[in-house]
Picture 1: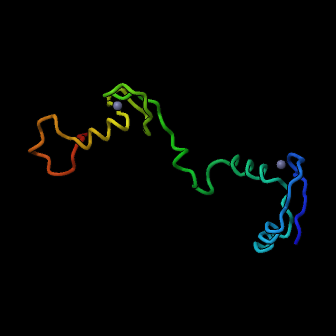
Picture 2: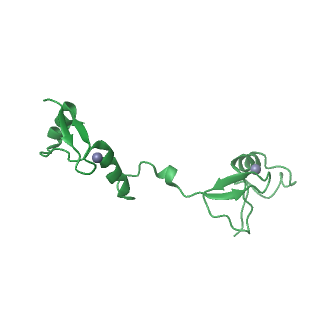
Picture 3: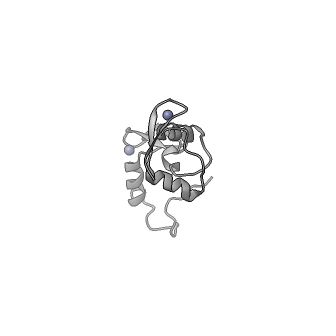
Length: 119
Ligand SMILES: [Zn+2]
Ligand SMILES: [Zn+2]
């Protein structure tokens, strides 16, 4: 097999259909050549939107801007902040969880589970 130069039907740019790609196509049983350059193929794929493969779910997660109730730093939280609950930045949140003292309720009622929310 040899490299082939093809013309993209979308952008009209020439691109190389390499020997190894041809081999790959043949293995997959594809009989026709790619009609678009890699960029246009990628663009089409991503413009299809959601569905399909879930490779980058995490980075697509909706985050909301918020201000930390403890230190006042701007942060982002994965839920929509409402006025009725304080929002903490990741630093304050983790330090709050790790050091659960301070309220004088260290030795008592709660057995395991840490902070309880009643709602
Ligand atoms: Zn193209
Ligand atoms: Zn903070």
